[in-house]
Image (cartoon, rainbow, N blue to C red; front, side, top):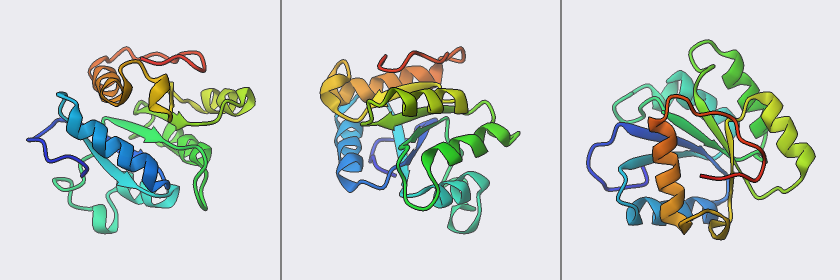
Length: 158
């Protein structure tokens, strides 16, 4: 867990292999007033184990099911798009909100993510997120609370 904040019902599984990017999330989680807990894994295969509650992730108090997945597309071994496809095909997770967290501006990559079932794109650069790092956490918190989260066009943010 990335934050020392009190109990939170808003849990986000972050699938990201870049430590610098997860450090930004740590700063955001500690600076934002919203109570969002980030749980980080570094690759798609570990994310699958987390979602399935396998191995070290079997204790759901320590590793709660996420309300949202913040997913990097470019991951070692299993790609983010492959993980997204698994999530959308798995009955227990097919409606789980998935935000693709990317620094790719390639329209073809973003289109593939949309077709695979991404709900939204979030730019990795905090300068592109309204409100900076705190705005990123606020946007995630609002999206979790909004049951009608819809897909948005590439480049849109909260």
